[in-house]
Image 1 (cartoon, rainbow, N blue to C red):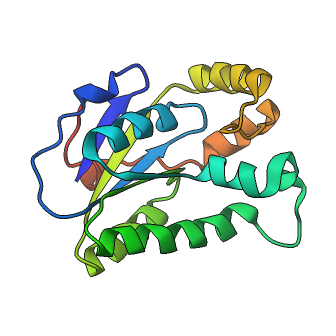
Image 2: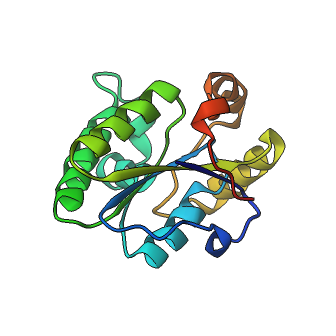
Length: 176
């Protein structure tokens, strides 16, 4: 199931059906769309473990993460985060994965992995226009707290073209 929200939507207004058993919430959206804000509220409301990629990468690699060339720090951290998520789901605890899910293939992979261990995957798409994302990135770069990764605004245009928002069948249910 996919729910769509806009970045200005109150996260508590997401109407999720009553569900029994662990759920895997995949938070999909572009840089600066409001994914972490939605994730925080959702994790609190659903009593779920929240795993936010930027926070982990920042704690483990700091501001130097983007300069590492020997390996991809984000992919390495995702592997470890999935191990944690899988353990939680197997124990019956829901999980919120806050890491963008830019590609449909990645979303499909994690849905299948969740289903394979008896969890119900739910895609939450945080839709936001490019200009608002850019403004938020510029503000976040100035604040630079422990949750933030410094983003080069010049790279946003390139990344915007790579981002694959969920469309068609993938968005079977929407909430705005």
